[in-house]
Image (tube, rainbow over all chains, first blue to last red; front, side, top):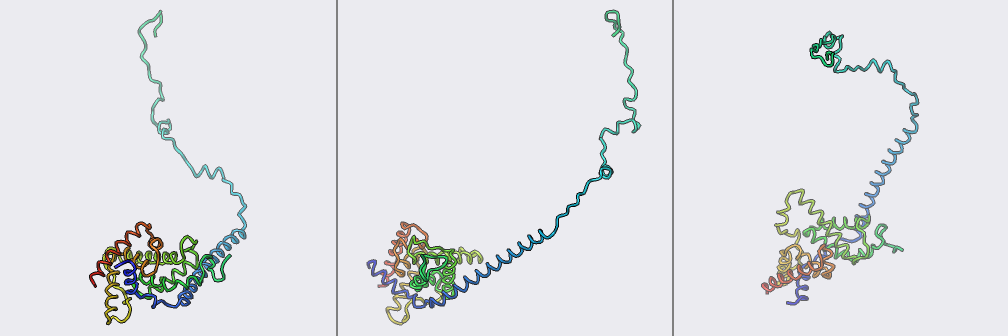
Length: 116
Length: 178
């Protein structure tokens, strides 16, 4: 069996074109689907544009708050506090560290007529 | 310059050119949908929508027929891949040889020729998918091996190998019938 006979045998065994639906019908459905999706996208785009326009208009319509709020220094100082970790060594904490000078031992070794 | 019935988003494609290949494209869509007529109609409609909205843009690099067949093939592939992954049946899907939803052979199965045609078509359907596709494209849709390979998304060399293997397999099977 050569290629042509084989091709003819296969071609004859399949008859598919007879069942094809009318082109106009399929094309009309495709166009309907295409235009519907286009309308849907157009609607979404217009909705997004409207929301953006509303936001811009609201931003423009609302006047900016021009009042300057200064910080009161006294209020600021009252609201904060800080203590150094070494504050516990200060005299007010009643700890006798370095309040009296320690007594040093006197030297008994003379050098050139004087004690060191 | 666009033709009168050229598509807005696909200026190289005309409605009349599509109408001329409609029957053949439907045959291809039918075979992509395991001969489910409604699914094939839906697939064709989807292919036309892709042409209308310009997602599938024809640029005259191949014939219009090859291009539209490729669009149908790609849509069918993505559709059945989605379906298969959704049902988690990929392995079964590939392993199972699908039974056509309708008998696509000529009427008159009572006759000797009808029976023979039915048997030949069954042998075509039992070929591995790529071999089956190239046989259908070359024998039934009158495409060249180059165009058929382009539709299948393989190189011409690979297409030729599938074509030769398919012919050998079919010759031996059909030889057994005689």
